[in-house]
Length: 285
Image (tube, rainbow, N blue to C red; front, side, top):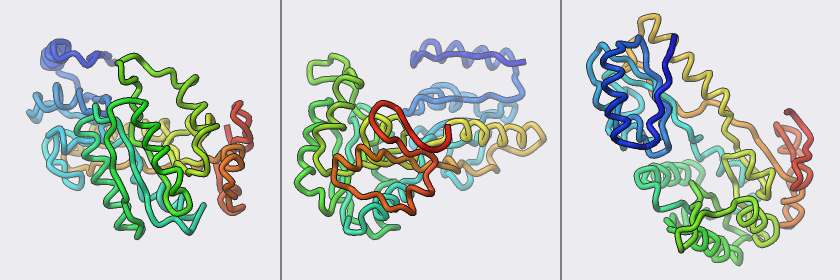
């Protein structure tokens, strides 16, 4: 038996959910967080007693204050992140083009603490792969994000780019139509610039490559933690984890449009290879 509560990112609703959990005394609570950790900061962090046990989907548990560190969470909560370790994406870019020496990263400044985590992860990935983090840029609008890509187009020979979370607003505050604005830009206006993603759909619609998150496996990862807790394990003794698997995804049309040759060894190892921008692909469904 389970009950679903939706926060709607509303602190007042979160307060009501805290009360409902206190009254309901569930055996386990799953906190599925918006990337900024809203559910954990507003609910999990307020129910710290040993009678409450949490499994959380949250990329920034330290930053929002629900645990002290990933290796030893302590307390009554453990969980899984939603972003892969960026070393995998950097290594993929290096295999596509061994001449890459630098990476530049862009993300929406509205994401706050998530961006601090992105920057920390990128610095670690740079150290582990020997590549230089040329810039970590926070932008306020879609126009600024596209300007970032244009800045790096002349540097495409030795620099590639990655995005954390794109701004989905224009300078005037109006929403961005991804299908009509961002995807056409990726397909037609990025020159030879390589962007490596963590999302399948962005490759289907215009980027060259991704180490793509497998959302269903993250669900399984969380469920396995839940079973351990229900069988007697203490949440605080279970390390917080990164997503443990990813799929390599490529787009041949995007590579061709950028003058990029994808190594056969990568293509043969890919989960899926898109052949155009219309969703046609070879590989697994």
